[in-house]
Length: 172
Image (tube, rainbow, N blue to C red):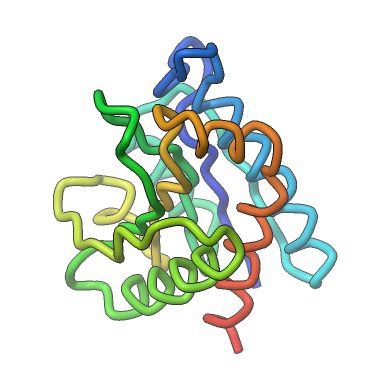
């Protein structure tokens, strides 16, 4: 199976930045690199993509690649440091996207023990709407929450394992 991983943000766009200076783009790339290795070790073909491009361009690259699945990895952020948890986004008319989101969400919850913010439909995200493959955008944890920031910084393999197991469950 060919899997397209998009590490959120990139280039001069850091994404969300924690009070301690941890950048979403760096966390997302780290998680994606670990996840890619796990997927390759399981026999899958993987593309890791992190460019400072529009969502339109990212989905165009995914469609050109002929990938069977699309997973975009991000960190959530909010003005309150109390916001917490994991959520996985999918496009409302994609039954397979919803199913992939549910598997990834459940697996991430098992791996991390973080609060369940649920699987959510998003019509407004081009990377979910315009990809040919089933697509999810994973908000791994809140980079603005000090406890979750520490996990994102110190335990990226935990998040990668959660996403990996979710993909594995979806495929089987």
